[in-house]
Image (cartoon, rainbow over all chains, first blue to last red; front, side):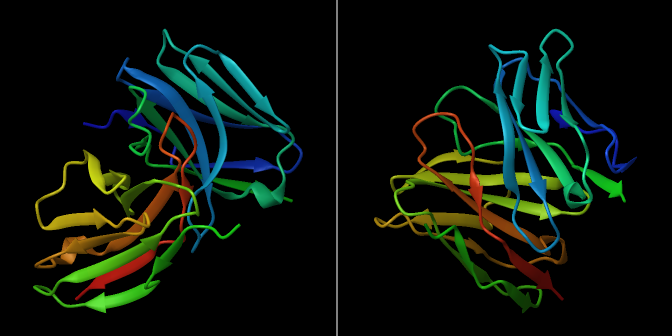
Length: 114
Length: 113
């Protein structure tokens, strides 16, 4: 039972263009969502998060959008840079206090071409 | 400040053996979580420890166990290893008081032959 899904295993974009990574979830109890980036041979690093009381959160080139009615979130990277090439995981958390338990999607490999 | 440290980084075991992995969280962090990453399954939650108590547990068999010490350092143990246990085991720490980001270590790569 995959509660968090990233249906696109890979995405390729040109440098300078927008990258849009998508994530769907099924559990309406999730109230906090995060995006992590992972390079090979490294642990995931936190990128950006959003609480379910918001529908948008920005941090520099990164913006996360949340559509609760559709149970969908997306990560926009503008402009994309070659250094953004990595695997991106979305993750969800529910019930305040269960902070160490995240449900991850299977990841999307982003390739940004120079 | 120092990040999350996991040891060993790489190890090879044979079926039936057991393995212990160690994790030192960021100083001041009281929550330590463990995740298994495999190519087909992504990152799957194993368990979380907070103040030496298991606070959450994922859907893994009892062969997977863990503990946390008074200094917040944590260990996880896998007994009777199976080929399917080959994976990257990631440890993450946080303050544990409210929803927020987890800080991950670089992982321990386990290969079971």
